[in-house]
Amino acid sequence: MLCAITSYFNPIGYRRRLENYRIFRERLSTPLITVELSFNDRFELEDGDATRLIRVRGGDVMFQKERLLNLGLGALPKDCKAVAWLDCDVILADRWAERAVEALRTSELVHLYEGQYDLLPDHGQRDPAECSRSFFGTSVAKKVATGRMTPADFTSDAPPVADTSWGLAWAARRELLDAHRLYDACILGSGDVAVFCAAIGGFERPKEALRMSDRRHRHYLDWARPFYQAVGGRVACVEGPILHLWHGDSGRRRYRERHQDMEVFQFDPAKDIEMTSDGCWRWSSDKPEMHAWVAGYFRSRQEDGPSC
Image (cartoon, rainbow, N blue to C red):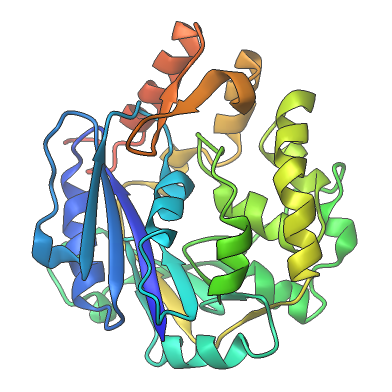
């Protein structure tokens, strides 16, 4: 049996995040475990919004996606053999779960689409399948599997890769994730980049793309090297597109620039964050400027649009 897990956290209280979650949930037919983190003891999701809803509190404002997903992994039912981890603002193609299970017979890590299409803001008033969309990029797993990307694209001095989609929806066999979990110290996002690069042995790409200090990179390598030994580059993708629901202008997410700006703080996960009793991250070092900058990044995304 395949189960899906997702994370939900909304520190700014964006309306679109909750709307997108409900669209995502309505169109997902697999069992779903959702881990919701509240920063103010108020929760937005209801029991019926997931097969199992796990509520946690006590964390600080930062990207907690993979940390929450790891909590979800610990709540999987015993008969679950394959796991999909999904962003909660996507719509997958028909038969994606069936195709994922088949692909996992020969691959260790499966991207659950071939191409990413971003919907325009009108999806809130119409059926998303009928909405205007724009092509964002081809699955990174498809590019690797078809030779459009090679090991040279994952070195520290390789140029940025254009028109490539790294995240949104992945699957693996349960035993892989039970043994290694996901790398969960990407507190400014891009955790999918870190996980995929480890899967194919491209350990230097995250150091450059995420602007990791030497100490942070060593922390990553401690997880990445055993993960690569298990995956060994055996990655694949399934047929079909994925629709990414609109939540603000994508340019405001500053996918590369955010890591460049963060570099000045010399983030060290071994010293700067610690786990709460609920299993989420909180700050553990005296760097108030870094804490304020990360919280400000969420506000700057304007996910409901610039006029909201």
